[in-house]
Amino acid sequence: MPELADIWAEALPKVLSAVTGRGVWTALNAARPVTIEDGVLVLGMPSGETELAGHLRLPQTHRLLEVNVSTAAGQQYRVRVIDGTTLEDWEVVKRRDAERRRMQDAEMAKMRAELTARTSWDSVYEQLSRRWAAVPNKSLPQNRARFFEEGSELIAEARKAIDNFDELQERNFARCLERLSQYTEIPSTLVGVAVLKKAGEL
Image 1 (cartoon, rainbow, N blue to C red):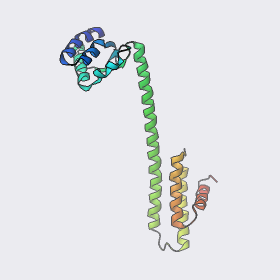
Image 2: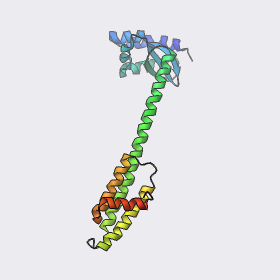
Image 3: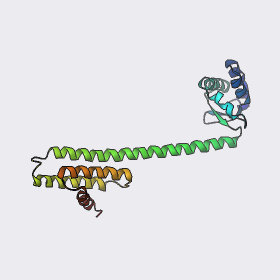
Image 4: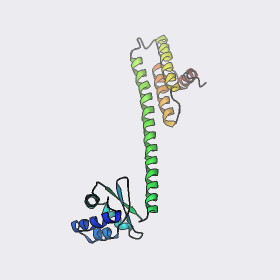
């Protein structure tokens, strides 16, 4: 494989001949090849010239860079434009990338956890509705009492199955308690006491 400097020396004139505009030419002439890593050729912009990097990130120019760099190298490469022209600058960029990915992964994990929590409690909420719809003679207190026992057991079992309770979990739990309270005409606080006792928390 050709050396990094040779690849850039061959690709640069071809890119220059294919673009127009003083800003793009200035940016291309200022860019310096830094390294090749994991199929990426890293181009750096010197300190004081970093505002020119935007010209090289424009889709058309970026595509020309990748095509001509790949042709000069004899294999497919992506091009990454960074601020700075040293390997240390590239290491800084990689650390920032890793931190950004870590934060994105953490956010995705949080979103998945919230979705799971919502789905679980939504299922309990819907089951309460379906079971209430199946209760005969809802006006009779004994039937409401039987439903209360069944519903409180259902909510307690869902509560016991959850390891970590955050604010979202507590709100969804409370929503189910309120629904059972509404159906059975028992104050929601008393419903909460009964469920928490069944869940082993009181």
